[in-house]
Image 1: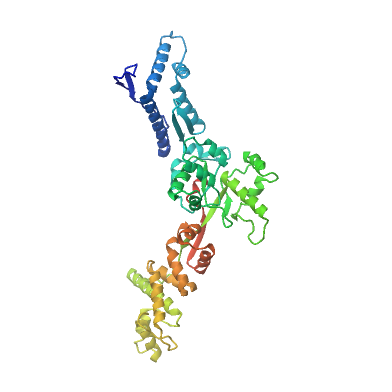
Image 2: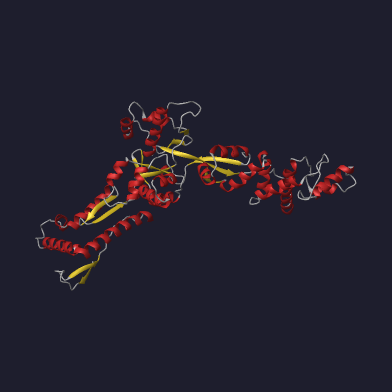
Length: 487
């Protein structure tokens, strides 16, 4: 601490402390994100103490009490085993407040009090309040994992409150933002953040900030809004022990039901609706929704999303050749494969290689048929050709070929050729939609995201995926915005 002389009538001591340091001693192996969290707490405490020192010389007065207690213990005989810290803790309000901070951090990770009954301190350690029970072991979620997941938040996501609305509202400070109160009151697991912003009359950016705040404080979690097509599976970290403490809590909420029976329903990925082909009573379906919400709140379920990969089949391996011949052959095969696919519908036939075309000019070529094939091969689809039956290829057909080629111009020739081999590629509208959605087919975007950004229905999207299934592959896993609870 630094002492600074103050020539002021209000200052009875003649000096005021202008610098104070709050220090937390951590283990060397603590991660950088955890260290930053403690740094933030130290900053809040330092600012609060500095404010009170300027307002009423709070620290100066408390320092005198501490030093007096220390001098008092020092004056005692050497054989008197009295700790100066115990005496300071009994007499100093600041010492009691700092001990309260330490105890709160150690017990719950949440620090909430008023410094000198004036400056409010609100702080939480994310890795202390975001935990997953793994049998008898408690798994802590690192702050950087939470930050990474919050960075993946999108308007189509939803928010699920982890506790009752009234409990959260009662825990808010008196001067909290009214927008936060309004958001909590309008929250629902079936609403997306975009819908929530409209219902609460808030900007989407405000909703994002408030949701991130609630998630950071473990008052809410990020989900995809509940709907019948959602797929859930039992979390690998779910506590399945017979004597799990969740069993009793579950029975209180759902009398007559067994937690383990309900968890067994999600041993394999299951839709929110049990059987979409069998009509169900509305009250039965509503109770199932409540069951899923409860299990999501207790980290028992994970939601799976479908991600799409564009994976064209590789052409058959050619016989061993020199490197230069292989390169030339690959270029030739790619060019011919695209051309052959475009000409296939009109009944055109092309020779399989340049050497075949060259043989047309040889003495072994057979009359007009060979010359016709040579003429057809030597012409571009955009120039004008005749089909094998002698009909003329119209300008519309050539325009369609050019359209097909232009729609997929961002793809490599071999991928383009594989796509055009699909029967659905002959339909211009299907090919246009495929070309529009192709940037999403890299395994980084799930169906719900594509539906949101491209304004397309699930049935339409699934139909397109089925039509081009020869070049597409799907897999199911969690959304990055929720995967930190996978452990």
